[in-house]
Image (cartoon, rainbow, N blue to C red):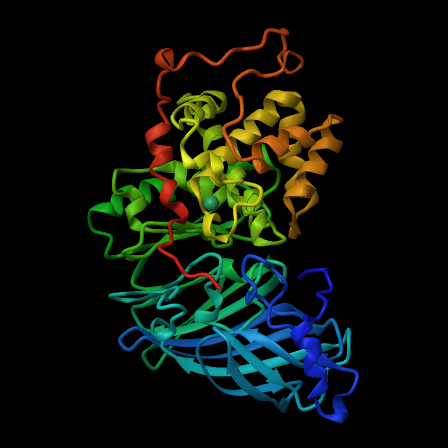
Amino acid sequence: MHRKVIAPSVLAASLLLVIPASAAGSAAGAPGIGDPYYPASGNGGYDVSHYDLRLKYQPKTDLLEGTATLLATARTDLSRFNLDFGLKVSEVRVNGAKAKFAASGVHELEVTPARPLPRNTQATVVVKYAGKPSEFKVDGWSAWQRTPDGGVAAQEPEAAAWWFPGNDHPLDKATFDVSVSVPDGTQAISNGVLQSQTSRLGWTRYHWRSNRPQATYLATLAVGRFDITTDRTANGLPVLNAYSKDLGDNAGAARASVERTAEIAEWLEGVFGPYPFNALGGYVPNVPSGFALETQTRPFYSPRQFANGANTSVVVHELAHQWYGDSVSVAGWRDIWINEGFARYSQWLWSEKEGEGTAQELAEWTYAVRPAEDPFWQVKPGDPGPDNQFHAAVYDRGAIALQALRNEIGDEAFFRILKRWPTERAHGNANVSDFVRYAEQASGKPLAALFDTWLYTPGKPAFGTPSAAATKDGRAPQAAPAAERAEPKSWKKITATNGVHDTGHGHKH
Ligand SMILES: [Zn+2]
């Protein structure tokens, strides 16, 4: 849930003129939450605290039928509000009474309750629907990946509208119960803990619970035929991994990577503090895509991530997001560095720990392989623009920024910040500037210029000479000349993960 009260847009305010007299004083909620990168994402006027999704999916026809029950709180007096949704709706009820509804925009469902919702009151919204997710397209594109044995919802920045109605923006997080009925012999995978599994008349129902605030794009659903492994961590958290039975030659490498989830999460706890959620795992469906995504508690991995053998680096990346991205989420999509700079840097730390190249060596190499005239250096990781939200610069220049910070403030302060930030901000949202302020306070150093250089200034900055104060013996290490530098051993495995967010997703709205 977000704490910001979103001001109704000018458009919403103008609608005051046409609402009936009985609703005087209340207004329509805005059709977007106010994110300049994606004006249609999310909605204004209310917060959702819980989603209860009761679904049925038939892989043969791609038909998804469901009832979504949302627990919401009005943040203004609402005569009408929007949900983000693309499937066909048959009925909407608000606090038990039938509501009027109409589709509009690219994925808006406008709901007019029988009575306006007073500010700060709770409402129960029930939406009944049915449709084929693969047939809902935005600019010709579908977030739903259909597979030979089912389908998968895992996308960023938007995927929810293909399978449930909601307030689809990371600012409005909620808990989730996802219950899905699928034909016997098929499994339904989602976030959190598998609470129950029951079979009746040829259908099996899987009930999943994610009991910590979760952004809508981090909610996932995968239906298919999976091999499932389960375990418990040393701390007693349930681990559940799922592998499509149809991974072919990638099956071994996928398992050899994702089965190390608990081990990698344990190491990450040493770096980032206590694991923030109730379950762990990962899943690898038989999708043709190449990306991976940090879906909460249970990241999604495309089989192609393992085409060249096991790759623990991608598992490190997606698990690091559980702290940086999932627990502490972007306040707006321009803050994507809060997610990706840190997830990439965690891959460098894993390499350092494995003796395959230190973060400093990886930063120097990453810096050296991009000549100054490379357009890479023109992208600002702190505000890349929607077209470049998942540009390599957000990851690589974003991670060099963290190495520059480490060199500036020293290991003790740096690792204290890496661990305390996700603990203090757990289950919330943050801007890039929040992190800059936090790092300044925690280190006692002015850092605005450093972050301005690395996150907000186009061009290739100087790098490679930590300040003398930051080195223990006062001897500043110099970056080796390119000819003498060796490619870090982990380099190829890390670059093999560069497609993690290459979602083939060109639509913008
Ligand atoms: Zn990532």
